[in-house]
Amino acid sequence: MSWDGEPLIPTALSTIAQGRLYYRGKDAVELAASSTLEEVAALLWNTAVPPSFRSGGQRHSSRDSARTRAFTVLARAAAAGTPTFGRAPGVLQGEAAGLVGCLASAFCTVPDRSAPLHVRMAEAWKLKDSGADLLRHALVLLADQELTASAFAARVTASTGASLGACLVSGLAALSGPLHGNATVRVQSLFEEVARSGADETVARYLASGLPIPGFGHPLYPTEGDPRAASLLGSFDPPLPFRQMISKVSAATGLRPTIDVALVALVTRLALPDYTPFAMFAIGRSIGWLAHSLEQVASGMLIRPRARYTGPPRAT
Image (cartoon, helix red, strand yellow):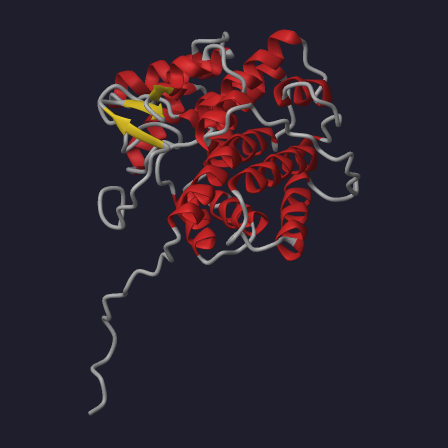
């Protein structure tokens, strides 16, 4: 069950083929050129009209970290949420849109109005129009990526009939691990090291230690590299340490940057807070978690794999 094994779950949402990522048959990179997150949600959720991610004018404690606020708001939604079984798709899709707005507001207190989410996030983070479009680009690229650990967690929860809020909590919990969405923390640490020591010395130290270089090389894109990273990095001028490191790693190892490097480069270029890469990942990927949850609910199947027992022999 690591990258290429069971479980195999039928899905019409997204797939990776010949080094490209597709949302319902449409190239994700091409969609990211102009689509909003709302339009991609309509595609993945199979709705006729793009949803509106209203935040409901929530207020959050300024004493809590952004991550704490995000977990708190979703935990409350899970505790108060209604089970999904027996509810019409349109009702569930409306609830899903509200949850995305609440999650985004927990991370960056977006204004509660009907403008596209990336515009309101840019307003909350005091970005200009060009920065807003870069947010839109990144969020679309992050919306889904087949059966990731967090998507699988959300689907398992959805298969029990739990509320959509519970599904999002499951997805966010899985995303928070350092081998998934929290990989951006390791990438941030890497580039702090690059700033201190330079790209040449940093790469030499990693190669000498035999440790993998965080943010470079992706098992699902082994030949041409992560197309999401290439698309996002090509949409702005990355800071010099990023350009130097990408060039040095590519020359020394043949590995190319992942979306984690692109996100950290973008946040650095826009001078956003350190928590922003994880926030963008969670907000964008919430679209996919909800799409997987809705698809799983519609299937009516409980996900309950069997274990291969390797413990002591049974007593006879």
